[in-house]
Image (cartoon, rainbow, N blue to C red):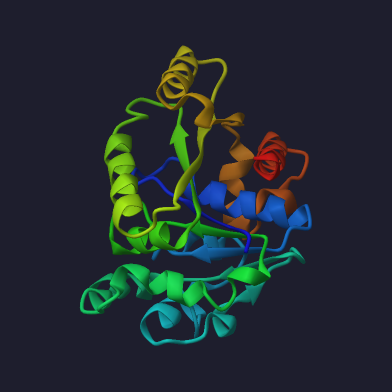
Length: 252
């Protein structure tokens, strides 16, 4: 079995989906068999690959709630080694429907059981909250990546996330590990970015990735064209950053 990595931070706007999409794409380009799970009802990871989320007939919701085999949900992408389990707004109802389920925290883990040995990496894009979907991701995964933006209030809410991770480790997933903390939206021209980077490195120490995702307009533009950064502008700083991150991940 390969690594199952949840990209999570309950704070929105930290580059979580950008990281899930482009890290998955980079791993696929490096010919690692990769599956991206879009567990966010906003479906931004889905649309980032040009999939019309409003026209989906099958998505991850169907696997979680209707026992649809995930093999029927998984779709190809334009990257040979990368596949995606898409989602849309219907996934919002999953949390309510899962409440009555006896093993509600383990539904995603059960869903992935039949495919986890087929991939080197399974990347889960979590919703920007500590809800039941996020708990499912943390229960199913082997590792966590926490993106933190280099802006004001960067560490706000992170202690709550760390506490949730500890609870999951104690009760549902004792093998869960923090793989790394990723600094995003870094601008070397700003003292604030440098100060936040130092604060995060002091707090998380060796868990901080050496790779830093620099603020890059191409990363913001790519989803609007339904493409990961490598198909939108492979020469951009954003593409170089995420390829470097993928290579660093392979070394860990």
